[in-house]
Image (tube, rainbow over the protein chains, first blue to last red):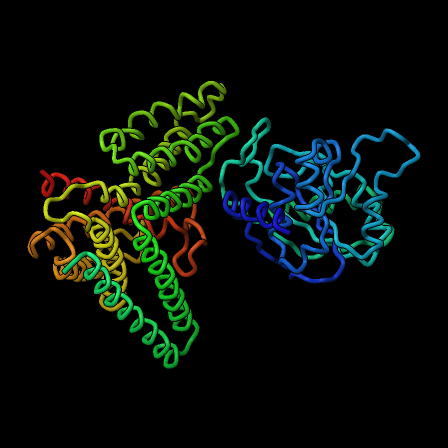
Length: 199
Length: 314
């Protein structure tokens, strides 16, 4: 897809986004990549750091209130990134916001999610929301891979339009293991710790 | 000989040297054993391979002409600046200054070269860039290490944009009886700088004993410097036929280039260390980053430019 290639080319020119795999290697196994979220280019950066043959089946989860707004953003998200939209504000309580994600996982796709739910203008991630835990429990066979995006909070501080070109390395860590009967809070704190450890 | 003939002779010579270097790498690789030996050979091979690629890129740019060369060096500045600023601790308040450095200063500086406006090219960054960058940051009102942040950005811009832009600026000079051959002068500068780097490394490995500045750069030795400087000066003198210089003048110019390149390597190494890094980046395999290759060039280019301009243009 040419839109994808343009997005990837731009991101590489601006921030490099070269991958560094420590503790895990690229694999076709179903995975949920979870990463710290500090800028609008996080999604593209992580996605383009994956090998091309994995990108087709790895779907970034994008906030609907940002990416589904306006024809250009929607086009980039859907055609360029093959993204899945998630509603961050629940308008109808009977609808599970994780529904589209669950459907993608049921189809066998891998996901890229940012469990903080919103951008943090700092090097380390803030507290995680429950989505990652719920998906991890529902799909016990999907591998959970922590990813740390370095430097991107410096590239695009709040209110900026163009990213400043600073080199960002995308660090993939070792698979994050589930512990039987672990509480949600402890799971999320450990998951956050797994990213902090990569920083 | 026309400029074209000289260019092809030059290319032929460099390709021959690289072929020899590639074969030597193979042969040494077959003989060496032991972990550190193999690591040195692997590094050597990676360097030679990177040389082939760099050489090919430069050759294509030269064949395509002036504009391609200017665009090429604008990209070199872009990547060098990106490496420098990645290692520099900046804050959110520096965002505007950083954006301007990348998206305004680089294009304008190289545009000035392309239209041949020497007077503005030579002061644009030291005067207007210098004053503009802190002015952009001050409005954010973040005074936390304001001077340090501003100074580091100004340094990055001076080295990565201003100094490096003096390489393609050689195309601007009107040297009598040398019309249309300036691209060769540019090649000459790069060749002498890089030969000096390589020969200093080789002489240092073979005879190096007395370290010059072990804290800043453990690999630089007196023996390496003397051997490398003498070798590169000789090569520079022997290449006089692609320059507007006589053989003696070429030796003198080559020596200036070698000396500035040496100082550039040392200074940039100290800068890198003070920023807490070993390599500037990992862009060029075996060489570290763009800035690791351009450190000596960035110091040699402005001085070579001004010496040539002062002594050889009317």
